[in-house]
Each structure stands twice: as structure tokens, then as C-alpha cells.
Length: 449
Image (cartoon, rainbow, N blue to C red; front, side):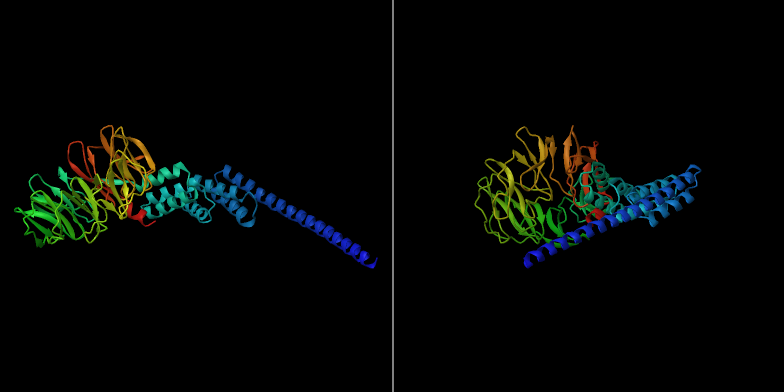
């Protein structure tokens, strides 16, 4: 009985404690509610007072009341009041305070997508595009599905300037600041602003790969540096230098392709029906109508099994670990070990640059796929070139322009011809056949994000 009594007394104690806690919490809740109501009432009174000042356009006095309402009280209305303060700053032309408050809201992650856009536009207009890009990129991370924010960011990312030249033939720009150019009689090199860098005196001129390019002068191929100085002379009697990549070139003699150092020393005694180099040191060579993959030591990685290989604008097949080849079923991406990256096959493809790959369907319409073979941009264009600098050149209604990965035409669509971007620069041709240079204004800023 004594044990049972203890249990009863303990149970009663627990119940009493629970009742006390319930009453206490109820009392605390009541006190809190009264305090909140009191703060809300005081805050509302301040805003009502401010509204009276606004009727007479007394913006400074209205601002003072709004600030007091914000700093003196924390209620559910604070967000609404802060937005009201923004409106006062804007209406009263108090722009410094307006943008300071916007920045405060952004740093506290209280801002909406529109506020990120307003700040970005402000900094671009103030010739501080770096800050504008920062706010757009922050906004996109917080509001990834906001179409207006995406559109504004993409428009700024691909804003460009165009420089006309007097040339009707330009080589490919490849981030080496030198562009091969033809003046109608001889080849030379220009900078992307159109100024001559190396005089026009050559019968042929390759792109620069690193510090060197190959030119043909008086019928002889020579390796030159960016000052135009000779560094090596061909003594093999090459009929053509088809490409240069790093410290190697592809040379042609008597219709046969060979791989040489850029000082014109044969890498091997083998000759082929065709050959392409790549920045990863690998090469594709052709015999008996089929292609094989060679490693850096010019040893075969695969047999001669590929029906076709497709170089990019630099005449390289690989970009990093991806190359474009074809088997009997169609075109696809191949790895450096010769294996396919995916099972899908396409009717045609363009060489990979540094992004989405241009591929065609059976009707000859062009679109773009990613490294998994998934089609990102549907088949709809007359022609296309693989993406670089996040842009893909496409031909639509007979004219060339550049789209982004959202399939929005962000550059041009009025060119006779266009070539892939290399970094911030691309070569284009207008409808009269004159070549020009496009430069993305904010490329370096976006690269830093």
C-alpha cells in the first residue's frame, strides 16, 4: 500500500507541474502577444505619420519615420516597411540611399529577383560592370528559374563590339592575339583590333599555336615567333603544312601526310592518307580509308577502325578527353582510349570546340548535344558549329549568328559566315564578303565568376 501511495503522489506531482507549466506558458504567450501587438501598433502609428508627410512630398521627414519603425521594432511588417522605404527613396530621387538599401537587402538575402536586376543595371550604367555581373550571378543562384533574370544575365554576358577589317579572308583566331589575314596578295598577321602585327609577305600562314606559327616564304616553310623572326626552316621539301599544334605539325609531301616537330624533324618514318593532331598529344591517322588513334609516342591506341574523324576550327580532333569520330552507324564522341562516350549516333557532326557539339539528324537539320549524347538544342538549323565560349554558331534563314545554350540568338544572325569563338573573340564575314572581328565586352569578368 505504501508503494502504491508513493506512485499516486508522484503522479499528482507530475500533473501539478504540467498544469503550472501550461499556465506559465500561456501567460508568457499572452505577454508576448501583447508586446507584439504593442510593437505593431507603435510601428503602424509611425507609418501613418509618415504617410501624412508623403502627401506633402516631405520625403526626408517620411524617411525618418520609416527608419524609426524599422530600427525600433521587429514585427511581421518589417519586410513590407523596408520595401516602402525603397519606394520613398525612388520617388524622392534619393538614389544613393536607394541603392544602399538595395545592397543591404541583397547582402541579407531579403531581396527579390527584380532587385538584383536593378542593382546590376545600375552598376553597368555606372561603368562598373564587374559588380553588375556579381549581382546577376548571385540572383541566378537564388532564383534559378526566373526567366527575366536569366535573360538579363545572358544579354550582358554576350554583349559584344564589332570591328570591321578590309580583309576578305582571315584565319581562325585562337586566343594567341594574332589572326592570320590575307590582303588579296599576301598573308600576314593582325591583332583583333585590326592593326597589323606581322607584315603581309607570306604565301601561306597557319594560326599561332603557343608562341609559334608556320609560314611559307618564297616557296619554303619557316617557323616564326610573334615578332616574325625565323626559328626553323623546312629542309624536307614539304608541299604543304596542313596544321600546327603545340610542338608538332602535319606536313604533306607527294600527297602523303606525315607528323613532324615544329622544327621540321620527322617524328616517325610513317606516312598516311591523312593526319590530325590534338592538344592532348594524341593524333588520328588514316590508312586504307580508315582512321586509327595514336598516343603521344605515336603508338597505336586503336586499329584503323574509324570511318571518319572530325577536326575543330583549330584542326584538332580532341578537346580535352572528347573527340568526334564516326563508325558505320554514325557520329559520336570518343575517349582517348578509343572507346565511345555514349551509345547514340548522329547522321553528321562538327568538331568539338569546348562545349556542346553540333550534330545533325537524318533530314540534315542541325542541333547540339552534350558529352552524354543528350540533345540539348533540337534539330532546327540549316548548319551549325560546336559551342565555344558558351556560344554556338548557327545558320538560320541563310544567315549566321550565335545562340546560347537556351537556344536564344544572342549575337548577330546577319552574317554571311561565322567561326567559333576563341576566348572573347570570333571572326565573322558580312554579306559583302568583308571579314570582321567580334569581341565579348565582359568575357573576362564572367570568367572570374
